[in-house]
Image (cartoon, rainbow over all chains, first blue to last red; front, side, top):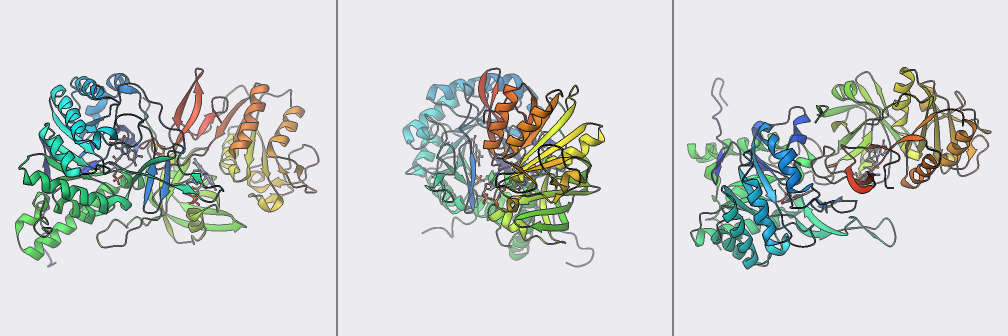
Length: 331
Length: 292
Ligand SMILES: Cc1cc2nc3c(=O)[nH]c(=O)nc-3n(C[C@H](O)[C@H](O)[C@H](O)COP(=O)(O)OP(=O)(O)OC[C@H]3O[C@@H](n4cnc5c(N)ncnc54)[C@H](O)[C@@H]3O)c2cc1C
Ligand SMILES: Cc1cc2nc3c(=O)[nH]c(=O)nc-3n(C[C@H](O)[C@H](O)[C@H](O)COP(=O)(O)O)c2cc1C
Ligand code: FES
């Protein structure tokens, strides 16, 4: 760079439904607690976080699964938390009133064991001003009934979406499972039922054993759980690609937010390129609380490189990258 | 909700290293943590290079989860970590050299606390579990508390502490103490399950029981850390004798900050079993409330 020449500014903002996010980096449900836990982290890069999704809430309190609840595996981690939470009543009383203190947009995640429970949860959250959208979790592998059951059945997924749509005034985000046989069909069904945003995906159902004892022992107290982290990124990338293609084919206006294995800025570029509007970061945040800043810096570097390469101002806007590889991906 | 303690993520340089068999000590330059950490609190060590997120650089995906370690001592701007090699992460840490840097998050967790009205603090460490106790002993001594310590191991070779014959706790026919406590002027005794001429023959819990019997007239507070089996036996003794205690426990962790709900441990509260988070509600718990 020549002396005195200015580095152009990269515009990282994206429009996700009715929300304008300052960066496409969203903190994933279950990996950022209720947000407040991050306030004690010195120098936490709030300015690089577009929004955060609260830990999933249920109607009744849930004690969660027995320990160990987490385990490290090759290029990822397993978890079986079992949606430990105090239920919607305690949430409304103790957490909801304080959400406005958080320095970014807040999305609430809900999970039900029956379809009706989703309606109850959505309805209750209407009374909470600090919430910008609801993310409907129909994909957690760590709940005995409900959750993922609805996420692998196009009809049930649509019904749950519609119930939330009818009981909640804001944007409806629906979080899908990578276990769906045909994710494009599920995405279509949720979109038809009124989903504004589809989040792809939750963890991949998985398990692991410790062979240092014999007979080998399950790594998780619950035996089975969900896999997250870099190991799942190529899987989820394909799911995002398939869902985006279908949504574009049918002319649906629902947008896709990617969640799976983001570990560095180029992973975000990949997701945006196949049509995701924003991304969620889960395991990486647990691994490095300063990750949003490092991701943002990496994104800026990438945009500057493309800007120079293509000699077009448009590539200084991150939103321009959404779907930019779909042409090259045509079979 | 009370104001939470600030926690720092920093790159900390290795200042000093030493090792004894598979037991290692590392001094890390971590001013922000050293100035704020209290006994019983811990740090998370992340073994991947902090820059692995940069575009184009190789992915560091081997050590996804943090390795939590108690702070075993503080000297000026340095914290000391004492650890044993048990798996891939600690094996990698054993390769750390002076001048290397590691990513650290801390201070984390609830510290030990002193309860007024007790005459003496008895610190019990099972194997590597002794780690948080030297720092605790130093701070208690500074507060003017009478402190004694017991360290147990299977055999002399399995002993994670440096032995000395200074500052030996008067109990049975013991002639060996741990230097980690002697250096703070705290009397200690070594218990070994495999017979040894200068140590108590038995477990740390056996030795604790005989010390308690010899000191029945005193109001004791017990601080312990070690294998679950040891804590279970110790808890039984504390309940039988109505002795106050605090235990530091270990659970696998994915964040250390209360973000993931991954480090659950079972406790009994108001007669009901529930899970608490070891990283924010612990790792130090009232010994009587743990469902071990
Ligand atoms: C609050 C706390 C304080 C600790 N303080 C010390 C200390 O001062 N000195 C010391 O030697 N050890 C301490 N430990 C245990 C230490 O964290 C583990 O020995 C270490 O994480 C093992 O890593 P590894 O990769 O070598 O083992 P692996 O078994 O290969 O690790 C696999 C995974 O399991 C986790 N894990 C394995 N053992 C434990 C364990 N006992 N507790 C929690 N997670 C575990 C690892 O972090 C890793 O994520 C402490 C644990 C906790 C929770
Ligand atoms: C410890 C842990 C807890 C999680 N809890 C939830 C949850 O409560 N609700 C939910 O929708 N997803 C939950 N997830 C899934 C994440 O939000 C995310 O979709 C998934 O981990 C994939 O992204 P990642 O690879 O970036 O972590 C959890 C993931 C982890 C690792
Ligand atoms: S380790 Fe994540 S909540 Fe304790």
